[in-house]
Length: 374
Ligand SMILES: NC(=O)c1ccc[n+]([C@@H]2O[C@H](COP(=O)([O-])OP(=O)(O)OC[C@H]3O[C@@H](n4cnc5c(N)ncnc54)[C@H](O)[C@@H]3O)[C@@H](O)[C@H]2O)c1
Ligand SMILES: [Zn+2]
Image 1 (cartoon, helix red, strand yellow):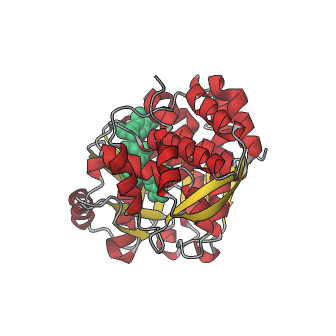
Image 2: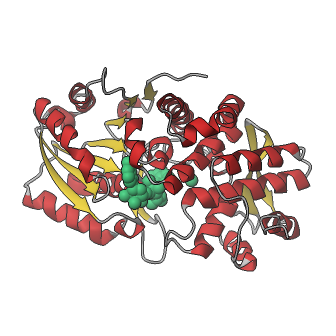
Image 3: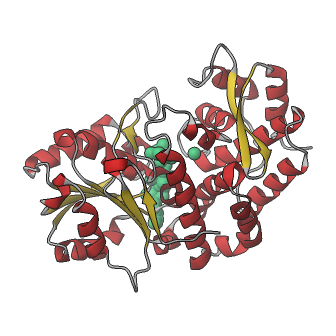
């Protein structure tokens, strides 16, 4: 398994570097300068705004010191933690501050936090002055393995999640897995669902590594965390490099577990009752069962997936949700074509393929298998 600590994201003149940092060896100040110096806006950067939330703000001190060393004067804004902060209102508050600070196109945004902060701060960086440099310091596992790679930024509309947004690639992403020590257990497990997803779609070795290291992962063993974060970033970086704006179809395989997962999330509401990774865990199991019923894989794939997700502390059964509404939500999915529901299904662990399905009964039976066995 490749566990390189510096992962290049190749996107022509928007290329950048993801560093899996070792504090004793790597220097954040040098990284920031090197990252910013790649662009016109970044080269003249002397000031920045750190956007963070109240759960993560205590990590900001050492970064502020390093930024000063790099010749960049940091300001800071702390927003409320949680999905409701991914709003136009919150973006507007950050934009107000940038105007107050007389920020110009050489002013950088530093996103310090989970996926909510990355998406919000990234969106502000995309639209302020038609785009200012962005440095990401993801602090949740989900943000480290998923949302900080790929350049999607945005906020929610009160009725539609992630509908307001822009593509804006960061100048650099700095990942320190030590930040995960304070992440709540449920949030850690939620991020692990995306790691398992990368294993199923592309990397049997990563899947097997998760199987053999589940306990060390839950104990937040640094070397295990570094290895899975590095490998996950490399997989996502390679996929998005081939389809930067989600137009070529290559990114589509990232949706394994998400057709049913998104429907579960939409029906549950985004109030934290079911976290994204928890919904993806359930979605991956149901979609593996669907693949089994269509004869695409043999049944040990679903069983093996279920065992691993369970070992990682993720849900494998679904209580108290309206199963009819889950099917209905899938029928409204914007990725559907001609009334058929689009799925990414496993052919083995490490390989997936896209299918347009209209066999609602088969889909319903697969979702039904998430009901607790009595
Ligand atoms: N842009 C993308 O490509 C992309 C991809 C996947 C998900 N997302 C988005 O990411 C968001 C979810 O991200 P998330 O799961 O990181 O949520 P989040 O940012 O809400 O973080 C989860 C919780 O953990 C806390 N937290 C974060 N880091 C911490 C740390 N080191 N110590 C203690 N607490 C910490 C946060 O304050 C929050 O309460 C969603 O809005 C989703 O739409 C975006
Ligand atoms: Zn996801």
